Image (cartoon, rainbow, N blue to C red; front, side):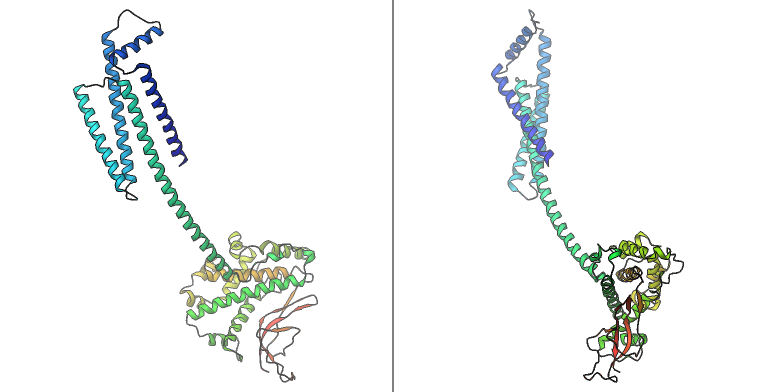
Length: 448
């Protein structure tokens, strides 16, 4: 757009200079007749010291013919430029439709075509212009005006295109903002436990049980998000949720029908936390540093991975310990029949089994949960002594010291006699011990 303005400005300057030439020439020689031309030539020869007693009439005739031919060609090109400018105006007037603009351009085209026809006749009949210098300058003025008009039309067209592009950019920016919003909602859904940025300034020397509790809370939220997604897929696939819950935990009396979801949560926790008490998380052929360097090793791993998304870790190092952990846990947690009923095939399982990682919401939710469990394990072995995991057996009495009920109703009777103290149906989320600090396990209770 700026280049068009520069060209138009340059042509305006050239047009002004051309007008100045015309005025100067007319002031100097008046009406340029053959005698005027002869007088100018005579003056030029006197200045150059080349005055002679007579002129060569043949040379003068050739000069006049040449000047007349140049004037004819100048008028020809000026008319063509006018036609070009009129055509550009006609095109510009098509959208938006401008009747007056089209009619004006059409009249110019017709006029210039007539002029071209007249020039052709003049050429054929050798009727040359008696004032070629003036014709040359006027033709140059006409051509510059046509070029200026063409560039102005181009400028308006480009301005219109710029406005259209700006409108498209605005629309695309709104779509981008909408997509970003949807991505944030999806990310929040995939990562409901939020960010661990609260631990960005954590140092090994300042590590305490409260930090472990924070990461555990995030981990449990992520587990529950995966369980909700799994139950949703089971409903879509037509599963009998009551039968599935009963096959996980048998003989349990539930206070409410929706409490059966805790059975699925307990199953996921058992599979994900299995091997948690081992430094290598029961991963085969996974080497560890010497014991004196182990605490620092696990803490550094925690700080390195906590701010990364699971898919970033897997893409960066698919064969890492965390990658192996994801592979082992997925193949154990997601049964082939379950995956087949969810997705109609075993493509995800086969991809994981071959060392790849599916780009699906289901696997992304699983991987984020696995990352939280992995980070919790790294943090557990960052303590000295390391944090230990525990769960309580079925039918044992409820103890507020070691247990916390996952439901508000704990079946406690008013008299709180030994016969009325509720029993543990099963452990939903395991508990942990860090030195003398006990982090309660979460249990589902049933009447005694």
